[in-house]
Amino acid sequence: MNKKVPYQKNSVVWSYALLLKTREITHYLVEKKKAIDLSKPEFTIDRHDSDDIRQKILSISYTDWKNMGFSKGTLHYMKQNAKGDKPFTLNAHVRKRLEMRREMQLSQ
Image (tube, rainbow, N blue to C red; front, side, top):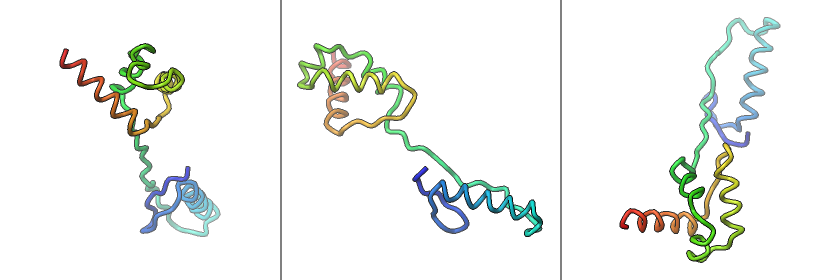
């Protein structure tokens, strides 16, 4: 709810945009305003994870991950995140090693 969205030539926080739209509807219902603007602000979620990355994480064994130089706990939490529906982020060095692993698998 803290993401900014464009609203009436301004950039406001999404929760404040909801408040403004609610106020707008209220003013229309009590006949303070004659017309109502039914347009809605655009709200998008920028996801940095993908189904491909989720599948990569879920398919890695703990021994392969350990051989890549990471701890078992890191992979455990990554697998928990990959199983869920929520978006998640990866550190740059982890993402880089996942990509290297993918390239190694493609070359074999």
